[in-house]
Image (cartoon, rainbow, N blue to C red; front, top):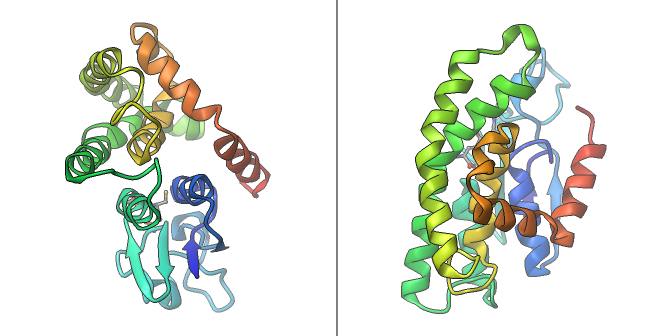
Length: 219
Ligand SMILES: N[C@@H](CCC(=O)N[C@@H](CS)C(=O)NCC(=O)O)C(=O)O
């Protein structure tokens, strides 16, 4: 049995989206970010990323994490690549070459895109206005120009998907990193292929269903 740890207002979104695309059964346990609680260590505090019971599952202390019949893994993109390979089908790699490309795109998104996209989102929309840092937002947008250009060129030549001409775990992982950049619509204006690719990914029923459940979760 697959257990996914993490509230939906976290990167657990992408793990839940992936499991639903694969059509595999799972249970999800709410683990909230410690920094969203006034006293995460207090007796009776909800299960959080500093709780000893959760650290036993993921010593890195972040969500999402999974327990798959005793195999415990953290790191959202690694989890999704594992699930795609385990369950197979069109979402996963057909051979070693596709596996390498899916890993490459996922690691690129985590290293070159997500930190800047998060800086953009936090400092343009997510943080309370008084705490926003306009310089950090601007630096994030600048740093994303190259990844946007790279992805735009790739999608234009590859038929609208990252690997193998079909929607795969690579599209799902990379779309989740680019989602945070949607706080800066200017980045998308000169990237029509990126815009169309992200819209198509986010129109998938399992994404919209997951986001609706996320929106229903307490902020
Ligand atoms: N690279 C990790 C990052 C995970 C991460 O930082 N998760 C956040 C929630 S989105 C978290 O757990 N924050 C609370 C904490 O670190 O205590 C991944 O993709 O899984």
